[in-house]
Length: 371
Ligand code: AMP
Ligand code: MG
Image (cartoon, rainbow, N blue to C red; front, side, top):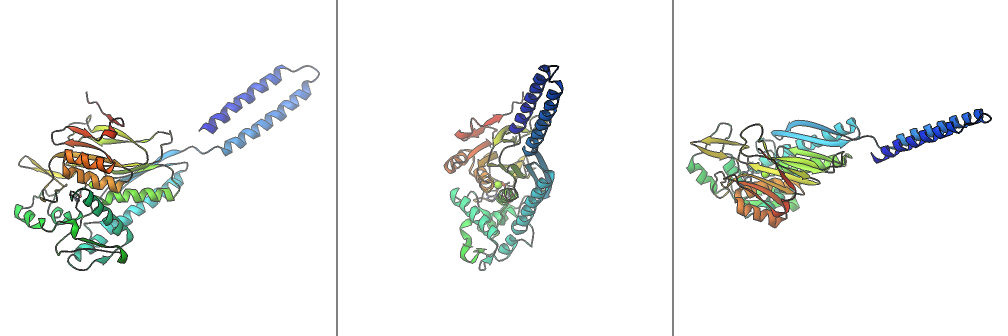
C-alpha cells in the first residue's frame, strides 16, 4: 500500500515539472524544448509503469464455509489472488476432513472407534495425530484435576440432546465407574493407544475441533497464506493481520440471548491467538424447568452446574477447546484460577449471569452495550 502511495505522489511531481517546462519556453528554443519535454515525459511514463509492476498486488479477504466434523466450519484467508486463496482453503478443509476420519466418536470407521472397540484389550496402533491429541487430552486432565476427562464417553453416549432424552439415574451411576483418564494407555514407542477397562469409551469431542483448527492453520501457512482465521464452530484460531493492518475481531455470544439485538456479549481482538467457548446453550434440552446440557462433570455424569459459558484465549486452539470445557466443569471461581495458572485468558458467565474475567483481559475486551 505504502509503495503505491509513493508511486502516486511521484507522478504528481512529474506533472508539476512538466508544467514548469512548458511555462519557460522561448521562441528560439521552442521546438527543441518541446522534443525534450516529450522525451522526459516518455521516460517518466516508463518509470511509472515499472514501479507499478513492482508494487505488491492488492490483498483481499476470501472466505469459505462447509460442514465438517458434524459442524459448521469457516475458513477465512488474506490473499492477493482468488485462485491461491481457494487452493489453500481447500487444502485446509482436506486436513480437517482427514482428522475427522481419525477422531470422530460417532463413526465406526474412525481410529477412535477402533480404540473404543478394543477397550479392556491391549492398545491398538494409531496415527501420530491420534496419539498427539490423546496426549494433549491427558495433559488437560492432569492440569485440571480430571475436570477434563476424555473417558467421559461412557456417560456422554447416554445423553441424547436431539431426542431430549435424559438417561435414568441408575445407569448414570453405574457408568461413573468407567470414567477415569488414568486408565488411558498411551504407548508412544509403539504408536498405540488403549483403554484399560472393558466398557470404557473415549470421546474427544471437547478437544478434536480445536486441534483440527490448529492443523488447518498449519496447512494454510504451508500453502503460503500469511493471515487468516479458522473457525470450527466455536473453536477459532487466528493468525496474522487483516489487509487493513488490524487484528481479527471475534464476538463472544451472550449465553441467554433474548432478541436479535443482544446476541453478542463482547468482542475481542485476536492476533496469533486461539479462542474457544463452551456454553450450556449449544446442545441442551429443558425438562421440568431444568436445563440439561452436553458438558458433563466426570465425577457425577450429570451436566456441570455453575456456569453458562466459558471463553478461553491461548496460543493454540487444542488448549482453548479443552480448557474451556474443563473450566466450565470447575465452575467460575476454580475455572478462573486454573486459567490464570496456565497463563491463559478467560471470560466466565456464571449461572446468575455475572461475568468474571482473568486480570489480563480487562483492557482487551469490549463489552457491547445493550441500551
Ligand atoms: P465443548 O463443546 O468443547 O465444551 O465439548 C463438549 C463435548 O465434549 C461434549 O459433547 C462431550 O462429547 C465432551 N465432554 C463433555 N464433558 C466433558 C468433560 N468433562 N471432559 C471432556 N469431554 C467432555
Ligand atoms: Mg471444548
